[in-house]
Image (cartoon, rainbow, N blue to C red; front, top):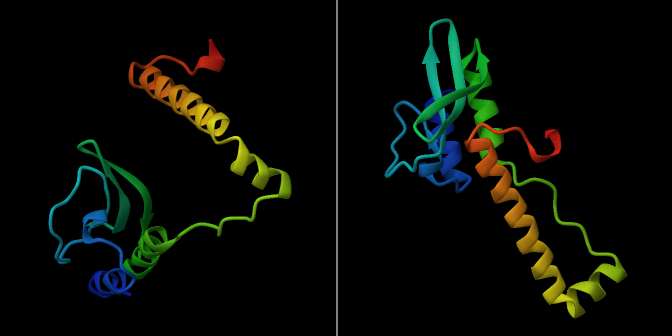
Length: 127
């Protein structure tokens, strides 16, 4: 697969063009964060463009391998959800406030960790 075939395959798979940047592939508005494919001396690089910076995730000597890797990344839906155990189903039905409270606490911890990381501080467990 070359980059033009990749564009067509991503379009056919329903992947929004805003999620990737591929030379010669039409796209509309590009959000700040997206995957990219680019030809470099000696091969191809695939990476992410985040907050104005590009980070190479993988390099390939072959365009086809790079395109296949990017296609897999952009179309992988992850594992299917598992069915809840009987006790989990009861909890979901009867303890929605507790679940929401724990979710808010988890979110606050994650945001605090992200703020620490942005300031260059070590993770909370390493202090």
